Length: 452
Image: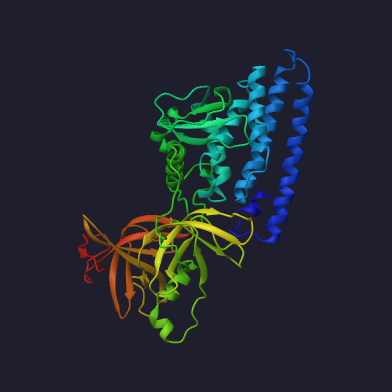
């Protein structure tokens, strides 16, 4: 049922909400069953023979509560009341009984895989510290399973961790998820006994193990599963995302809306291309409808989406001020999504990649002149290395070194692609350079220059 929840983006439709309600019922009943066993076993002194059973029941209850948390994250819903305090209480109970490190068999029946109450508790803590509002829906289960492999590197301490620049606090007597706090900041503490700390210093060991945990050909925003056999491996981009989050760095969009003015937005390359193409508009073609958006903060926009599943992490979005012409558009990629009221209003932050984009078209260099042209966007940057031009397209088949004929306005010329990068959900970016028409072969030495 969860696979239906991650098939489309936000906002969610009535069918998905009904499926989510059914998922919640199943998860709740599963967890209540194990919680009842824990209650019955711990009402009296636990004997030696019952020790394993108690550890198993507590671990399964934590797993059940964790499943509820994961499902809520997938829907971008707030965590229900009492879930976090129940998780904290179960861990405290296991510590009190001396069963927090007792290994029990994996619930799938794979007896070669064992985990403890502490392992399962740390697993859901680390997932919550990955800033769920910046994860794609399909990534939650992948990240949750990845954390299971590295939970041994994380320790729970009773005191602040020496040498850790940003402390991670667990308020075990409150219904709160763990949170980062700079070590230099003085906390308003109700008592040291009510706080635990996560020691994340050993996570530095995984930074050098990208080959072990990352799929070489995996791309975070690719719409394809290139290597189904490595589905349990992370993309390098997602791996880097997690490393940044576990260092206490929150994902944030570009500060672009400090003026707090309204905008018009469209989602996707095709819609953006149509609005940027002034010749198409002048010819009388119907303009793509734009969506009114309000500046929620200096980093975020909010809008009411009437169509289901339009927006997700990695969506390509273009926008303009309401008093600007339709073709004067900036371009960005969604990096964070919030649903404040669980309705059709979506709040999102963008990483702005271009202040102005331009519409182009292309086809293979050796294609016939009347070959159908594919849409793309192009923008330019300027830094210490000089001016560069980048092209964005939705074709995953193109690779570094490929040659294309690009059409820009009334001109056309050959270009070479380099620096392939998956920047959005189904979108790829290349640095592109114009080349000479009479190159001997695609593998010869290329000379060229920037054209924007």
